[in-house]
Image (cartoon, rainbow, N blue to C red; front, top):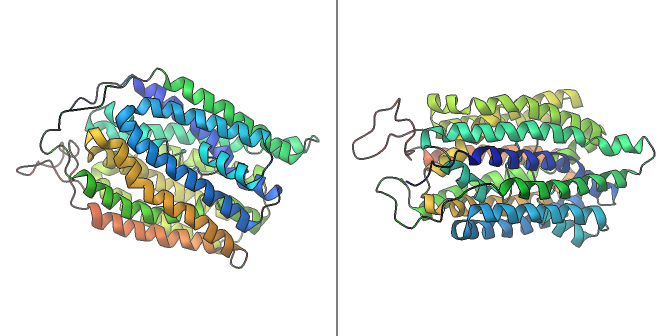
Length: 421
């Protein structure tokens, strides 16, 4: 394989993740609240998030095809510039439906996957993940994906704290909407910074020769199909929870961006360290079991949250849930890249995750419409689909070997690499 030769890319990729996570973190908090202050109800907030998700879905498909063909670095730069355009548009234009949908869709505004995710969501990842995978040998990939998530979560903690800026400015006589627009402008500037730190990234030309036998244990179409099913279920959970949890906290406890931003900062800090422990857990359980166990525990945590009596207790429970969830994310990302043909990693990442983009744009509209009658519906819906995702992931990948991983501790079976999970 021609991979594993660009370790020097890692600091630049880490910097890009940090900038994006910082921006995504405060936008995830303030964008739904901005819409509510601008006159949108629960149904309207859900509709904007769903329609903007449609724009994001089209971007994911475009990146999946374009990154493998034209280069992952070029697509990362283009997406950073779109993020800048989205932020500046929201800062300067009125909050009309079309403006909110297009600008937020192009910039990934308000769709960061929730606190503790490190910004791990959206059209950037089909281009970013192959570059990370190609920087190191297979046994190091889970560690690298853990480090980039660790960096993203720490940056997200800082970004979540910034979400309280509009409230602080309001106390000094600045209108709340003006404070939100200031943060949108900052997101535009950060988009330009993301493009700048991607410029030094090096990338080999797209591979032409077919990989050696045994390098990819699943044909591309079959791998994409299995990822599509599991990620589609996860997308429903993300759509129910990610963008609407902020709104749920606002409705349930009457808290604003300052309190929610503080909570999300605490969640990000608490979830950071477990990302670094993911590789150790994978060595013990295997990649697939690591993903399944963490998803199942996360689903249970969501079921418990609506029964808790205060914002403080909800914050504690949500933080613990995200700590467990952070153990599984690097394992899942590394697994996908390691079992993919290196020539098609961007399209595997894109089209394998595309169903999650589709389902995640459906669920906010559904949950937003139901929330007026049943406020806790998004949490129970997210828990149900997360549990279904855990079961489907185990059934789909429990017998899939991971090339180059697990060989130090598990003897290689005759004719193929060691099976993990």
